[in-house]
Each structure stands twice: as C-alpha cells, then as structure tokens.
Image 1 (cartoon, rainbow, N blue to C red):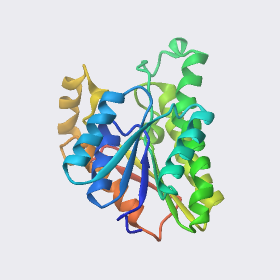
Image 2 (cartoon, rainbow, N blue to C red):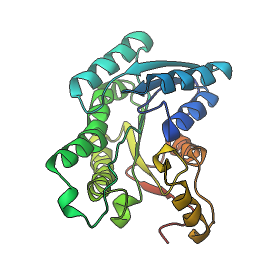
Image 3 (tube, helix red, strand yellow):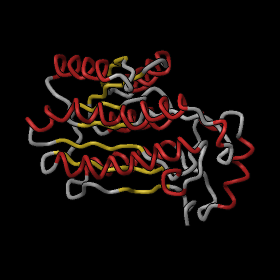
Length: 246
C-alpha cells in the first residue's frame, strides 16, 4: 500500500510508539488522525510536530474501551475525510504487579487491561472494517508485546492480554480477508515513558540483548509502516526486540 494521501488512524497516538508512528506515517504522505483518551496535550504536540514538518493531522478523543466512543470517532473521521484506510491499534495500558504475586491481581485489573488492550483493538477494527471493505483495500496493525510470547512482563494480566492480541490478529486476518490485511508488530523493551522510574533497569538490560541496545519508538514505527506497505502479508506476528527473545 502506498501510504501517500491515505487516511491513517493511530490510537494512543500522543506518546511513545504511537507518536513515532504518527510522525512516520505523515512523513510518508498520510493524513494522520491522532487518537487520545486523556493525553490531550501530548496529542496536540504530536499534531504540532507533524504540521511543522509540512504534514497534516488532527486529534480525536475517544476511549477505545468504549464501543460507542469508538464508533463515534470513526463516524467523525469518515464525515471529515470520507474513509479510513489505515488503522494502527496502538493504545494499551498496563499495571505493574510482580508476576508471581497472584493475590495482587484483582478482577478489576483483568477487566481494565482486557477492555483496552484486547476489546479496544477489536472495537476499532470492527468500526473501520466496513469503510475499508467499501474501498476494497485496508490495512490494520495491532501492537502486541513479547510479554505475550514469553509470559513475562509488567504483570500477568498484561502478558495474557498481549497474547490475546496476537490471537486476535490471526482471527481478524481471517475474518477480514481478502480486502483488509491485519498484522501484529511485537516490540520488546522500548525506551518510552513506560520505563519511567525504572531507567536503571533498562540500562542493565541493554548489554544482555543480542544487539546490546534498547529499541526506540522509531524502530517500532518503521516496522509498522513497512508492514502497512507490504501487500502480500496478513495474519503475521512480527517481533522487533533487539534479539531479546532469543
């Protein structure tokens, strides 16, 4: 897919990987819709950077865990631009709970993480699908995590939610073929604000990776754009982790 003049929606586009993906999509000529839930100043900063580089972007607020808000967001985008060509399902949350502390995991934790990380991605994909099918073309990239492959991560529910994202990707790829491609980019450790307060832990990890570096948001964004542009691939889970899982 040639991303030039395509309408791209990036959920959680105000910070981290979402911001990097938004900027990179704009560099490739896409008009970018930056979704945010609570991070309005960060979303506006992403838009400012895109506009300063000669691109075009707007921000739209919606909590992806709420189906009615997702549907309203897509309707707003379609009314303004006519369609949605690309969806980057990036919005995710976590809770930092020791992986072996099962008693600290509440039903509320499970609900909160699955509502955003899994159901939110499904809601967004479902809402854009009719418009992509109408155009006989569309591409979706879900953001997974190596936590979903290894079972390790910031918490047990987070790891399980990301494993579910990997499964969701395969199921959506089957459900939406042949017009819509659905793939998953799986980051390892990435230097984002999720490491806030744990920077020393990140620095200790880097020398133990095969490439001896922590991935940047731009590393992940580059893969997202590559996957969106590759028209002969769907249902794939692609890991970008500096060799962390080997």
